[in-house]
Length: 134
Image (cartoon, rainbow, N blue to C red; front, top):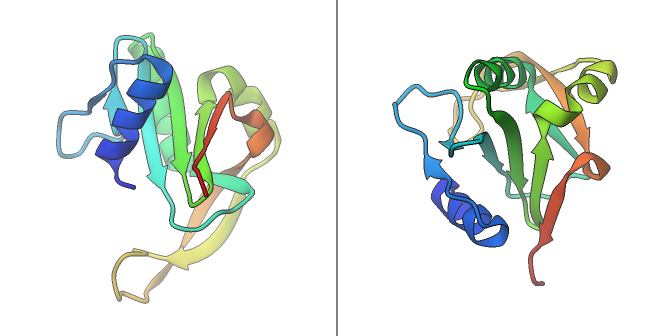
């Protein structure tokens, strides 16, 4: 799955009009009149989804400034999960921030590690889930 396929699927499943975000350095992936959307496409399934703290705070603030909802979408081998960050920001923050050491880039052979800070999103926080056919 890639970002454009995810955007197309979101539009079809939820009757949205999301378009890919403009600008090479935009911190989110898509938007429409009422949403800004960050998309994370994963190959493997994990019951708890992760959102990097920098993405969470940056996009949450941008959504507030634009008077929009910040939506975080995760796809994996099982399905598509939509999290309304704006609606659940207090619940997410109150769980506490986590940190872990990860590869600086997962798609390349660069083995350099960095510390990343993130928040965990339980699947029951998803406002919409679409399971893929097996």
